[in-house]
Image 1 (cartoon, rainbow, N blue to C red):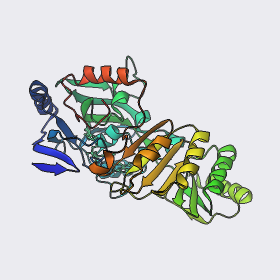
Image 2 (image 1 turned 120 degrees about the vertical axis):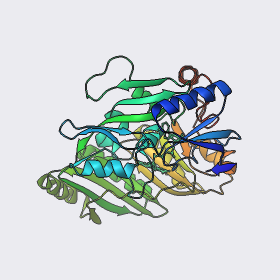
Image 3 (image 1 turned 90 degrees about the horizontal axis):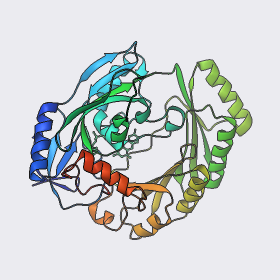
Length: 375
Ligand SMILES: Cc1cc2nc3c(=O)[nH]c(=O)nc-3n(C[C@H](O)[C@H](O)[C@H](O)COP(=O)(O)OP(=O)(O)OC[C@H]3O[C@@H](n4cnc5c(N)ncnc54)[C@H](O)[C@@H]3O)c2cc1C
């Protein structure tokens, strides 16, 4: 028996093709075997603690570029393709996806679609869901299916690709994803200011929102009496110089000017609370968290309404923090013992019956990621 990030893995099957995957899932449904699809394995510590013994699926052989036409600005990747391969292929043609990834990210494109991660750039450019134009997948019951295609405007019927985005591999295993890609901007610039209180930093974001709605991202990060607020623009060099002048007039000279958006360090080891709510609610929630014992660091993007709080892994009062959390939130990472005391997937959901009906349709044997999600 192996353990993969606190999950019990009794055997691992290396998936050779979509047809092979369909056979493996049909067999697992017939025998009620719990399945754990693994891409890069970077996010497996997120989810409920479970005593299931999983048959893990190694998707690393489903790797490579299926179809990439830079002039059409569309690309199709096998789901197990490493993100660094995706990024390098697009960069060669001056293109990119609307996400910022750490250069050492070991994730895969299928895993990124499954987790639905995005960052502060979601404000200006949306998430991967907005550029997901099609996919191939295998449902829990072993049905191999396709949704969408390779053209940007071919939507008819229900957009299954978007349903699978952020489903954490609980409905189907992705084998291929088709994406609309973006041109890399000619220039990309981030302006940074320091504040000694979170309230001052968030007021700065509110002013930015009013005066500079054309930015693509803004975020405040920090703790205690050290808060860094960054605002980011992309476009022509001359336009960015204009923005710098206007910003300096309004806010004073920036403390730093960067050519790359500063990514927060990965928080896999410590649990991290992520909440998404309207601006005013996010502001109040962030201010409350900043004074709460056991919150190590915060990052807040008011335009996207996202508050991320890195929590002390030894925190006894996990329940207390989640009791204060409002709206939609979840907890990433964290060790299994800690998580037994916290509601990982947020508050009780009103749409649980709908979610369960969708799960039953896609995965009637309840084999995919059994026990890790809220259904
Ligand atoms: C802005 C931003 C912030 C991020 N922040 C963090 C962070 O704080 N911590 C962190 O760990 N990562 C973070 N990531 C991303 C992460 O590192 C990976 O890039 C990615 O999201 C997971 O890929 P993976 O292949 O490792 O997935 P895995 O860890 O292998 O799997 C994650 C989940 O997806 C499922 N899955 C994997 N592949 C498939 C598939 N082909 N079909 C269906 N389901 C599948 C798994 O069963 C599992 O439930 C961030 C990414 C972005 C863009």
